[in-house]
Each structure stands twice: as structure tokens, then as C-alpha cells.
Image (cartoon, rainbow, N blue to C red; front, side):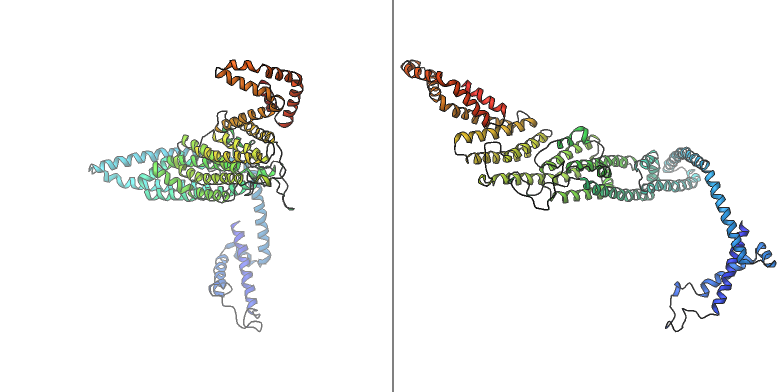
Length: 612
């Protein structure tokens, strides 16, 4: 094989030399012929010079001519060009046969690899034991040296050589593990777990070669910081592609008229559109089951044409960040033997760029976000994740959570204040035709307020209640302004009762029965209902009702004897009531059921009227 290859090489070089001689007899096209004014000056890059090629060829030719097989071929007059091709053909055949042999032995090669790996698994713990023994002996020698023991000098040289050799092996081993993080699609938890098994390696470096320990730590920080940044930047970008296409805009406020027409080129509503004022099932994102559910997989969602509200994307992103950060912090503390401020600093050296990137992305998104429910849910996601991090004893994210909340709270308050202002500035006369049914603005408020109240009850916040209180005041004033547009007091009361009843019903579905909002609207509803009943009874039974009230007042003051002079009046009232009460009650019932949208509320009003 080697001789054949040598002869092939010699043949090629002789052919090259012969070709070069032939070229010298012809006019060189790159020379000073009529086609070019002067030759190209390539300097060291000129690979056509005799010094660069022919001298090298001479050396190889001389070496190959001394080969015995080459000498024999030249004596017999063999054509070297033909012989070279024949040798190359034989080499290709041998190569093909070697490939087939390799394929046939592939199972044995895989088995050999597994055996080598198994040997490594045995050798590494053995090396660890020897390293611990070396460290113990070195410590004992240092202790004896400190006491002035002269015999220590006899073993110091041996120990130093062993220490240098151990440091070299440890450095190579740990760096190899760190470099394995860089492979695409690597599950970095596997090499981290492998490093933890040999954390004594790093402890040995700290005690014997701090410069190498610093090199390894710096290499780890540099590698992992780039990996985390790359991963989260890519994940966040892909995650935002599965957000709902339609999101709240700056004009989507509570007091905005519902008559605005969309442009010709506006997008049609999505089947699962992210609503602005209604919570729906969105609140489940902070439930225990969904809060720590597996993160979203963007490409899977895209294939299934699934879309999510922002808070769902926020939860997925920050749950991945929480989980990886906790694992990273605990690894840093255990492997690099740090705690307290040192662990905090090392953690942020690894995760700092990633945390800064996520903060910048959130800040950019919030600048154009007008979905108060989404922002409020994100706040509560952070509050819960902060508690989880505390339970896992990972304080390194505390400052990050504060920074996120410092972005979310002001935006939430701003959106809420924008809604308050929109209701305050709403002119009832611009709302078009009015009727006594619940108004869409009060329905928006009821859904919105009940959503925030139900979320806030899980982790109460006084500032949220204050903002909701401001919004409630403006909505109550709005209802009174709209009621004033009706000409009769009866219509005004019907409108007020329908709206108070609707808002109370929506609030009671989500909020606690003793919440301020529920209590306030219950009082308003009771007062207007009582007034309406009196207004309702006045035409058919006004005289009788007035007499009953007068009689009750006299009895309370101890003047019941004055009622004896009212016999004629009482007789007349009783006769009138007896002749018309059935038709009056039937007419009253029909009027009530036509006026109120809530059947239960209408029935309650009829019962109240009959009781009175």
C-alpha cells in the first residue's frame, strides 16, 4: 500500500515537471505580451514562481526516486502516467472495501464505545478518590511545615508535581464539560449534573490553583450567559408570534361610544378574540394548576393555529425564567462554593444579560398596551412567582421581580385612570337612542370591575381598591346623568334599577358578598326599588297608602283616638279598593314585567308592592 502510494506520487510529480518544462518554451499569457502592459506583482502571494513550486517538486522527486519499487519501474520502462492511474484505481478499491468492513463492524464499534464510556465511569470516581487523598496529604504537609518539620522538604517536590498534574487534568475535564454546553440542542442540565458529581475538583482548584479556578469560573459565566441570552431571545420572539392578533388599543376605553364604525380594510373579529373588559377564563392563568403548567411550545401552537392573550405568554416566559434561574442559582452555590452576596453577584454575571433583555422587551410592549386585565394578571403572576422563588430559597431574583412590578403597576394605573376619565367625559346626549335597559357602558364596568375585584381578592392590594372606587363613583354619576335624560320619574327609576341590578348581579358572580362594590350597589338598588314601588302604587292605591302611613304615624305618637273621625274616609277607600284591586294588581304586574329585564328582580318588586 505505502509503496504503491509512493510510486503514484512520484509519477504525478515527474509528469508535473515535464509539463512545466514544456510551458517554458511557450509564451506565457501573464508575461509582458501585447495583451498586458506589465505582469501582476503578487509578492508573497505569487504561487507561480519557480522558487515556490519547482524547488518543492525537486525535493519530493528526489525522495521518491530513491524508493526501490520506483527504481524497478523505471528500469523496465513502465509508462508512469498509466502506472499512476492504475495505482489510484487500486487505492479506491481498497478504500471501498475498508468502508464495507467498517459498516460490518459498526455494532462492535458501538459496543467498544460503550465499554470505553463504562471505563471512564469507573476511572473518574477512582481519580476523585486519589485527588481527595492528595489534597489531604498536601494539607498535612502544610501543617507540618508550619510547625517547622524539616522532613517536609523531602516530599514537597513530589507533592508539587502531583498537584500540577492533577490541576492540568481537572482543568481539561471541567473545560470539556463547559464546552459541551455549546453544542446545539444540548440539554445543559445533563452536563451540570455531571459537574456536580465532581464539585470537589473545583474545590481542589480553589485550594491549590486559584488562577485556574478563576479561569474555569469565567469560562462558565461567559458560556452560560451567552446560551441563556440566545435561548430566551429566540423563545420570546417565537412566543410573541402566537399572541392574539387583535389586542386593546388606546381608543378601547370604557366610556367610548359603541357606535364607532371600522374602516374598510379593518380585520374581521377572531373567533377567540381577546376581550377587553371581560375576564372569562383568563383568570385561570393564576390558578395553581396553570401557574406551574409546562411552558408553551410556539411551533406547536402555530401548527394548531392556537392564539393566546398576553398574560399567558408572560406566564410561560417567566415560568421558564423562574425554573431555570432557581436551578442555576442552586448550581452556582453548590459547585462554585459561594453564598450570600458572592452567589448573588455570580448569578447575575450569568443571568444578568438575559434579565435585562426581558425587562427591555416588557417595557417596550407595555408602552403600547391598553389591556388592564392582562397587565393586572401579569402583576399577580409575578407576585406568585416571587413567593415560589422564596419557598425555593432563591433570593437572587428578588430585585428582578421588583423591576418587573415597577413596570407593570404604573401602566395598570394609567390604563385604569384613562378608563375613569373616559366615563367622566361621556356625554349621554351623544350616545344615541336611549332606553331603560342596562347600558353597555355600565355592563362594561360591571364585567371589568368584577374581574379586577375577583383577582385582587386573591392577594389584596389597597391601591387597586382605591382606583376601583374612583371608577365606581364615575359610573354611578354616569348612570344618574343618563337617567336624567328620561322625562318621567318612573322611567328614570326603571333605568336606574335595571342598571344597578345588572351591575350587582355581575359583581356577585365573582366578588365576595361582603365586598364594598356589592354592598354599595345593593344599597342603591334597595333605595330605588322602594321609590319605584311607591311610584307604582300611587295611581291605583295612592289614597289607601297615604291613609295607612298617616295611621301608622298617629299610632306611633300615641294619638290613635284621632282615627275615630276618619270612618267615612276609610269606608270610601275600602269600597274603592274592593272594586278595582284585582284589575289594578294585574295591570301593575304586567307593567313591572315589561319594565325590568331581570325576571327575578321584577318578581321581587311585585312581591314588595303587594306586601306594602
